[in-house]
Length: 156
Image 1 (cartoon, rainbow, N blue to C red):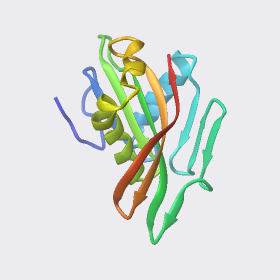
Image 2 (cartoon, helix red, strand yellow; image 1 turned 30 degrees about the horizontal axis):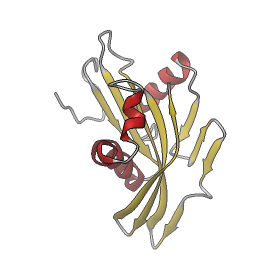
Image 3 (cartoon, one colour; image 1 turned 45 degrees about the vertical axis):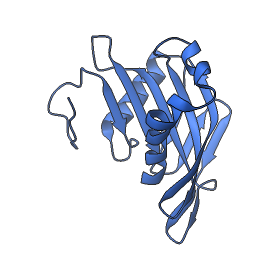
Image 4 (cartoon, rainbow, N blue to C red; image 1 turned 180 degrees about the vertical axis):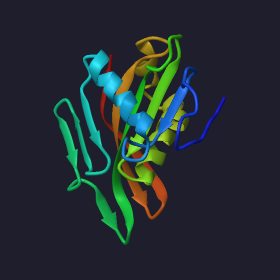
């Protein structure tokens, strides 16, 4: 079941894919709050003020590069965890960038690139459905993604 909506009409109890950060997707903010409260993972992701803090990695608006109104370097966070809004064993995935291009890069990485990357075994060595946080650097040319490079990945 797929629902696209600004507001949630019923409890999101099934597998959950969240696209976009807390500035435009309140459910993403709630997902991050649950993650910070219920695990040892601590993440600050503020897509409005352009700040990401995860362990020793800090990314700010000074790291984001925009030329001619398009980002040439953006960042995204991708989280694979459980769906914290479900009482059943369901998956939750969050893909959020500082811009829509970064968000798109994060989604592309987890759904298209990750299954074929050379370190695929590393991800699935942690179990069939590993829980992880990855921070990605996305290089762009106008609206085209040129490369996606993981900067930091942590399994939990």
